Amino acid sequence: MKNVSIVTGSGRGIGAAVARQLAAEGHAVAVNFRSDRDAADELIRTIRADGGLALAVQADAADEAQVAQMFALVEQELGPVSALVNNAGITSRMASFMQTAPATIEDVFRTNVYGTMHCCRAAIESFRRSGTKGVIVNVSSVAAATGSPNEYVHYAASKSAVETFTLGLAKELAAEGIRVCAVAPGLTLTDIHTVSGEPDRPARLAPKIPMQRPATPEEIAEPIVWLLSPAASYITGTTLRCGGGL
Ligand code: NAD
Image 1 (tube, rainbow, N blue to C red):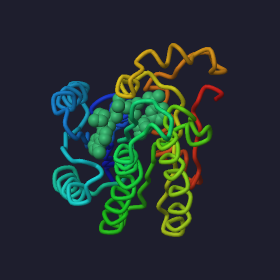
Image 2 (image 1 turned 180 degrees about the vertical axis):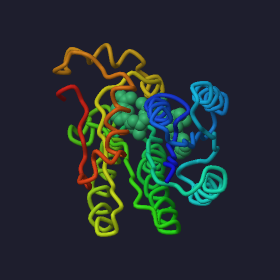
Image 3 (image 1 turned 90 degrees about the horizontal axis):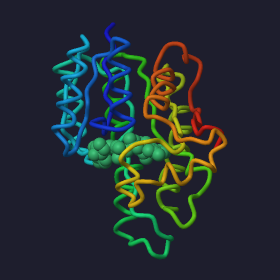
C-alpha cells in the first residue's frame, strides 16, 4: 500500500527537509503550512520536479477543526494516511520565566502540546478508519532535557510534555501495531532562531556543542524518516536525541 504522510509546519526548516526526504523515499507527502503558502508551494514544485507526489494543505495544526479538515482533504486527494510528523512548533523571544507573558506561554503550549495532541488524535482516527498500522513521530527538543533556563523554560516544558505524551501514547497503541516516537533535535540551522530574536544563536553556541557545530535540517530529517520506516519496526515510545552530543 502507498505511504501517505502528513508533515505539519513543513513549508521550511526541519519539516521541509522531512517532506523532501519522504517524497524521495516514495511517500505521497502532505506539506502542511499555516500562513506561508509561497514557501509550501515552492517546496511542492521542487518535490514534483524530482518526480515525487506532494500536496500543500493549509491548516493551523493547533486548531482541532482545521486539523480534521486537513486529514479529510489528504485522505480524499492522496489516500489513507500512514504517517504523521508533528513538526510544527514555535518558541518565543528569549527571556527568563518571570519576563515571559502568560499569553506567550499559552501560545507555545497551544501549538507544541495541544497541536501535537490534536494531530495525533486525527491520525489515530484515520489509521483506524483504514486499518493502517501507522507511525507518528513527534518533534521534541534537547531543551526538554536541559530546561533552557533564561531562554525559554516554557518551551522546554512544552517539549518535555511532548516526550511524556509520546511515551504514554505509544504504550496505549502498541498492541494495535501503531508506533509513536519522538526526535529531539539539538541546535539546528533554521529560521526559528530569528523568531526567538537571536539569529546568530547557532554560531554563538556551537563551541558548547560536543560536535562543535549545529545540525543541518537534513541531519534531523534523516532519523525522523528512519523512525517512520519499517527499519524501526520494533521501536516505539522512544525519544531519539539528535544533538551532536548535547
Ligand atoms: P521553523 O520556525 O523554521 O519552522 C517551523 C514551521 O512550523 C514554520 O513553517 C511555521 O510556520 C510552522 N508552524 C508553527 N506553528 C504552526 C501551527 N500552529 N500550524 C502549522 N504550522 C505551524 O522551525 P524549525 O527549526 O524547522 O522547527 C521545527 C521543529 O523542530 C519545531 O517543533 C521546533 O520546536 C523543533 N526544534 C528546532 C530546533 C532548532 O534549533 N531549529 C531545535 C530543537 C527542536
